[in-house]
Length: 308
Image 1 (cartoon, rainbow, N blue to C red):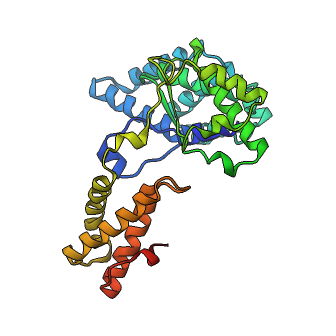
Image 2 (image 1 turned 135 degrees about the vertical axis):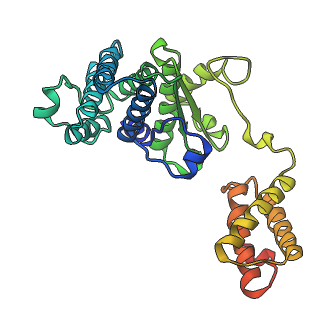
Image 3 (image 1 turned 60 degrees about the vertical axis):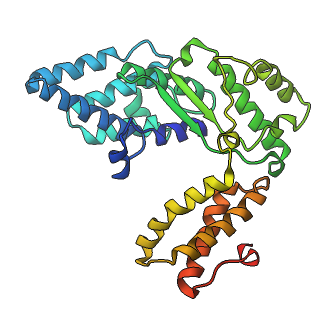
């Protein structure tokens, strides 16, 4: 249920770089409002009058059907209807259920929303969201799972839950109902697959034995570290791109020769620690800002002791 809530509260429509730079509102409510506004503008550009536009959205409401959860379908239909009728309060109540923030028996039940969102219905709701996205005219849904913790930092119970979640995700990807959904699941390394020999581990191992290592459309492994052939050169490039941002933020101009020295020192230190617990790219950025601060305030070049 927590995974579903994170997805539904983080969803955003496709945006170009300019729109992203202007800031973006997340969540199913903002997503549906943006979709509605785009459709409305398109209909206006096509020369439709208000009555014709209303009828077009009514057709959209009728098109939301044949998805896993009838409750989810009814919620989306009603959300579009409330947008069409400018009933903001009712729209917010629908979004409250969609985001898993509460079930108002009197209100939601009367609209045909009979299910509650919990761990027993979470995957059905994720599938229903993916199906709805496609019915609304988009190509599909991309879900990005943030970097997982290293397995040594997790308790035995959390390790098993981590493996169980991944197994369930892989199982879902093999179902027809999960079409149009692309999952990116980031992990620091593959050591978590060697954390034990329990039932959950064996079940997961069986599922991925033919995935990731060979050409298989159900799973592709991307080795992010291997995409950067020369880490020092890469960090130099990052450092030089961060420099103008830093100078603008602090209204300063740093000595370019000393800046290059700082970048080199911090980059070499970060690469040495690239197999540690913290990602070396993140470590580089953190220490580079320290180095820039020291150069700006004391005109000194950071050394290994100050890197920490």
